[in-house]
Length: 355
Ligand code: DAU
Figure 1: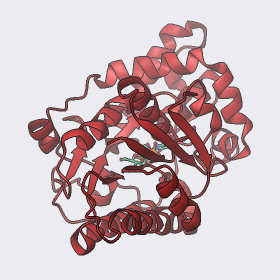
Figure 2: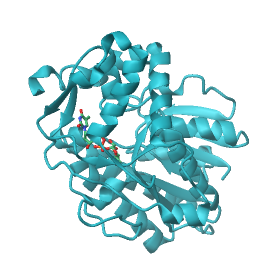
Figure 3: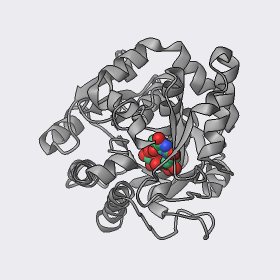
Figure 4: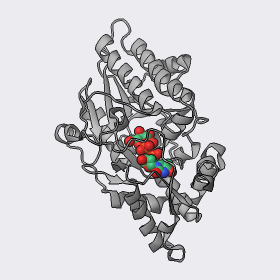
């Protein structure tokens, strides 16, 4: 890995990955690609990441001509593909954007990589296409236990289906053309710079504003959580030592209910802002997400045994760091919530009419 293209680099996880690379691999040449006008990418997420070895290109993963020129001009040998529409609720309201970005975008990128890396006289040696995927492709695991990397895909939301379709394409390019690929299936992430449409930042920002905290259904849905930096370290471990053609699930050993997670956040907020305690009084059980999956669970045994990866932070540590980051970054919150698409998730959509 010498010259890396990171797609979705201004998103929550993509920007954390660029930070990790700049810190741990200063020798790499990094090209960050982000459409910036999409749902998740925010230029402020890349603040402070200017470096001679890092270039940001604004563009769409569906733009084949742009991808062809980037791969050739930058002589890219590694693609880490984070760019995706990622919010389940939005995929229910408008699946089209998910099919376009997640399916067509992944295919466009795969095909550009095939043409560049497997051109005549080349066999893709030293190259890698890494697909960042999700535990949601394995569907609801309520009564069937942990999924492994070889479990059948059973996606149940338009978002999960679009990621599964993209993952199938990735695997097909390995099998059919010999493109060197790898995949990670990650659980829920938390940490700095996450879009406030997602549960953790939504709860933090709404609680700080004294607004109600919407929990879908009865709050018993279970998710597994890791800090975004632990996820990024897993992706780097796979790039460094994971076999081409292999997939790795990323996650902790246990999950927790949404209610428990939100109560943990409220307890922390009570300590920091005692005048507004108890924050848990803001919790409201609201109409459930259509088709809401109750439990996601994957086994990260392969990542642990083959690559020695372990999450460094447990859930409480990750929550403490995340909360502290949001409290310390009012400028980021201002910039993030100034975008209509972001503020919508904090006010209109989750307004009290949903209670
Ligand atoms: O499992 C990995 C996935 O985790 C990623 O692939 C997705 O991109 C990411 O968005 C996340 O999906 P979830 O649907 O689990 O994340 P979200 O933060 O939207 O919701 C977490 C849980 O909290 C879920 O059970 C729905 C619930 N929820 C969510 C929101 C936004 C609520 O109860 N209230 C809310 O307001």
